[in-house]
Length: 113
Image (cartoon, rainbow, N blue to C red):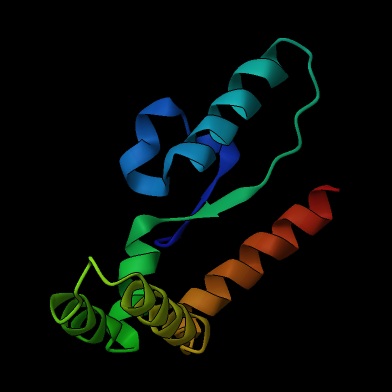
């Protein structure tokens, strides 16, 4: 899979790939499970998946333009711009191949539990 990593594949050195929280969860799963402590498996979407989502929805340019025009000393403008960016992110379309990977990873996890 290109956009998904299971916790069993992750460790603390994978922060650039999946972020700090997911890398830490992977580290806990790998290390604590070996010590007999039950840690549920899971999966993470990669930073590449996030970039792909932005590209697919043409959001990088929109976000860059919104931030370039922002007066960071204007708290109301910060709130409005942040809300606008969140709306763009929340209403984008997940590319079909990314959605398929997420669904496959979820199905595999559901079979495990």
